[in-house]
Structure formats: C-alpha cells, structure tokens
Image (cartoon, rainbow, N blue to C red; front, side, top):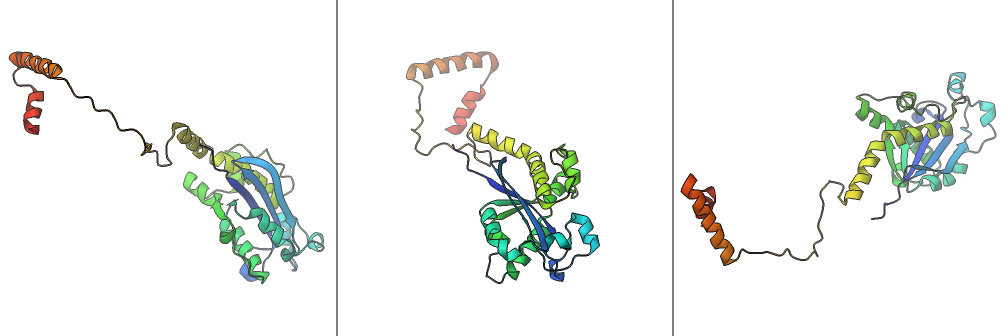
Length: 242
C-alpha cells in the first residue's frame, strides 16, 4: 500500500513585540519544508517592514534594526507568496498560539478578505507536544539539547529561518517513535487501530465434519477413559449441548 505524502511546513516568526492587539507586527518569517519527514531543500524566508519604530529591547531579541527593515517589503506585498508556500500543508510551530495569532492579525490587516491560518493548513504545536512528553512545556533550546540536535544548525545569529531549521530537526526526533510504529503497522497489514481486517470477498471457510468411523472411534476412546476415570467432561458437554 502506497504511503500518503505528508507535507510539513516548519515555521517561525520574529515580531516587534508580544501582542498584535497592541499594534505589534511580524518582521521576519522563516519556513522549512519536509515531505515524509525529510528535508526537501525548499524554504521560504522574508524580512518585513513593520511600519513602526522598534525599541532597543526588542532589537536585542532578534537583532533586526529599524534601519535594516526600512527598505524591506510590507506584509501585504509578500502575503500571496507566503500563503502559496504554506497552503495545504501541516504547520509545525513551537508555541503556535503566538505565531498563528500574529499571522491571523496580519491577514486581517491586509483588508483583502484573506483566510485565517486554520483555513489554509493544519497546525501542530510542539510546545504542547513537549508538555505531553515531559510533563511541562519546554523551550526549543531545551528540546534541541535533549534530542542532541543543537549543533546541527549554526545559531551564531538568531533568526526565524534558523529557528525553523532547528525545530525541524527537533520535530523529527520527537516523532521518530510514532513514525516507526506507523511503518510497523503498515508492514503488518494492520489498520491504525491495530485491528487486521479480512476481505469481505474472501471465499467461505471449508467445514470438515467427522466421518461415522471417526465418531465411533472417538466414542470408543471416551468409553476406555471412563472405565478408568469415571464420567468425562466431553460427554458432559455433549449432554448439556443436547
């Protein structure tokens, strides 16, 4: 049975603050594509002019200055190619509530009737996955060290695309057991619930009944047992059935 293609888009954003309701905007988007849990080499990356002045405290977080972003495109100038890249896939985001909240805010601000994120693709939040796995939510840095992938990406400079690449490695390790289980089930010919289904078109089973000679021999054998041990359970069951 051919495996259905699974397209994942690992995504991260950088912003001017923590709350879009206070006017904060997206300044960087980074996406990495995985198909069937393997890197395809396709990425999406954009710096965005937020049309607002950022305080130094925010700049210290992501390193993107007001001067650097001044000549970058506006969100409504990149939104179409961004949607084209992510649509139909499954977004993998660490703390998805944060990023999706900003994305939906930006979609709404374009005033073009754009769909919301949930209308474009499904979302998996690795922050929630880490809570289920470890009992409490864990940071991306913690997960990268735990799964031994922290050195696979050069994080000398912080950025959305760099963090998306790191999260992609983390996600592969986080879900490795699930993938192994899924492959095992496919090889065994089982359904997702572990129940093996037989074809409804299979030929009927052949029923072979004992011959008269075999029944007589069986009765004689039971009589020999009874002569030494008393009533046999096989005759008792036959009497009850009758």
